[in-house]
Amino acid sequence: MNLKFDKEYWNSRYINKETGWDLGSPSRPLKEYIDTITDKSVRILIPGAGNAYEAEYLHSKGFENVTVIDISEEACWKLKNRIPDFPIKNIICADFFKTEGVFDVMLEQTFFCAIDPSERMNYIEKANQILQPNGVLVGLLFQKELFKDHPPFGGDEKIYRKLFEPLFNIHIMKTAHNSIEPRKNSELFIKMSPK
Ligand SMILES: C[S@@+](CC[C@H](N)C(=O)[O-])C[C@H]1O[C@@H](n2cnc3c(N)ncnc32)[C@H](O)[C@@H]1O
Picture 1 (tube, rainbow, N blue to C red):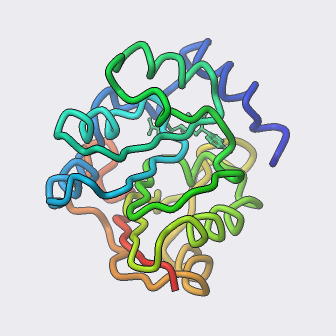
Picture 2: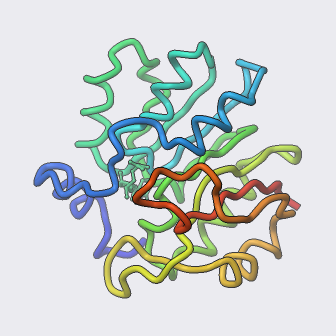
């Protein structure tokens, strides 16, 4: 793991309220995707979940197997306090790259852009490893140049296809039609399954 963006880095972002990524509500494209899932027993993982509004939404809709992982104790603590009835065993304060388990769905929301680009292949390998064969990785990736030396890190469709294609069948990778206004045309909606 890149030491520069370790748990102290992320804890201090939460403590200092430097959380410009935080939407304060579930991401609209993800919310609309969640609304298409009928089986409430699917095992859903949200890595780098932060305030995890998507997990809260899933929980409120009766999804029974939602797990969030975040490396920041501060984020996990805030989450436990905000959603006291969310199963505590499913709030995992740990490094995503060390995650074990099997999931049907992994939701991506501003976590991929938060990790150092040198870690991207590790993310893809881990997602491939923990998703069951018919599982899906669904979410959003920024399709624009962002920062070079600190998160969020950007990219584009060409870069992401080259990275994901060796390990994933890409079903959808296109500009999200339902991004919130400030992110309009800057997000790719993705849906892919492990090879
Ligand atoms: C940009 S924030 C996004 C939070 C949330 N997904 C959102 O959209 O509001 C990135 C999150 O990833 C977490 N994070 C960074 N590296 C991590 C790692 N290796 N494992 C788990 N979580 C990590 C940070 O603590 C932070 O909460």
